[in-house]
Image (cartoon, rainbow, N blue to C red; front, side):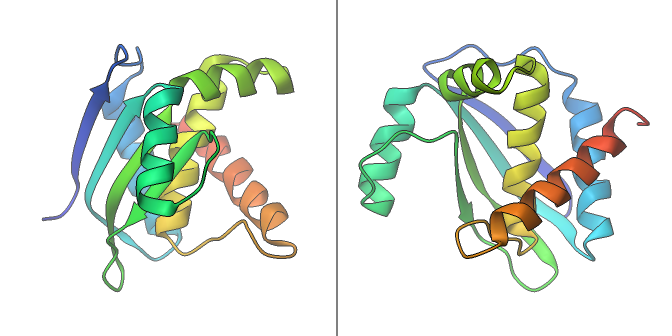
Length: 142
């Protein structure tokens, strides 16, 4: 299925964002990376839930802002993206930005992973941040 989004929550209130605008943005960013959006599910949760997911599926024992499970097939991107709203809030405070701005950054970060951009190896974090910055420039025009 093309352009199928699910917006879910586990133990937290759904963020008050313009989901239609976010979906248009995701589709455009994916297109700019020569990708097509398939089935993408965002699961908003708290720190304890993302820690549980991190331990259970990745054997990582730490908190994080996002975990992306990639179901991409060729150019058709898809997956389940867990976002800890607790960590989004603390990261926003730590870097001196707004919660909404940080949430947008994290939302597109997961899509960029599905587009094949990594951030764990040498020099990859800077590449990811450049793609995030470019994507963030787009959203306000939609």
